[in-house]
Length: 307
Image 1 (cartoon, rainbow, N blue to C red):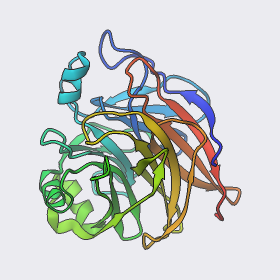
Image 2 (cartoon, rainbow, N blue to C red; image 1 turned 120 degrees about the vertical axis):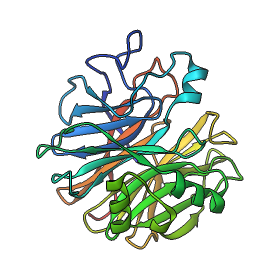
Image 3 (cartoon, helix red, strand yellow; image 1 turned 30 degrees about the vertical axis):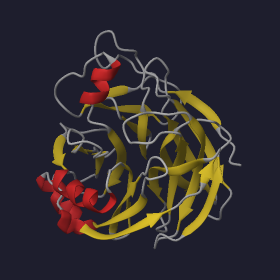
Image 4 (cartoon, one colour; image 1 turned 60 degrees about the vertical axis):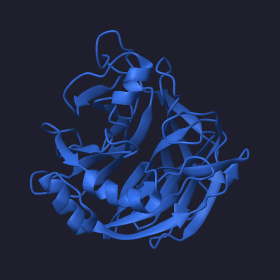
């Protein structure tokens, strides 16, 4: 069992809109860049950025124009459902790299992503640019049925996506995109099916009698990839359900499984950032409480694997 420690909760300096709580609740993707932590939430139009050390409140950067409804049911229907956040290498208009926020694709309204250039110190620089994922996602839906992209990481020559399958009929899979083709598509604002290299289906086992399914990914310098998985008792990609456990795993550069173990906290792990420090793999993790009144936690852990 992987032991986790609470580092902080994701409080904000100001709410997304008047009357909303001043915290991130539905944290769904996490990337550390330098001394900053970037978090995307599946029910928000903003990216949240926090200092990597201490507990100072986070700041928001807008991803999409407009305002989401406050009513929970209307908000769920209208949200962009951004579920994955990954760090990209330098691009033509982003010489210090960029963040790519990707949607789940679980409905036609959930197929727009966002690209944010970074400054030299790892902060957001400039306005977000939209990335249309609809052509790519439509192709993937023909293969997997209901789509639910939950993780993304640049691993070697690939931009690897994690497909999450909810319920016993769901499909979990690795989707490897050609890195250079994908980066060119992202730069022009659209990803199409021509970027797909391979797909590979997975079974991750169970926790508490419920299927574990992918929720996020983070690359390591040697090409391995850390992933998180959660067992959520729900039959589809829309409805939330009780959490029976979460786990963290490790894949070899070619996608071969190397490690998988449960975490001690009964939370819905949705985001992970992994890095090698002192010869060990250190993790930062965020969880989604599925409750707008509850601030998402930032957890830390160490994997018992060779760095």
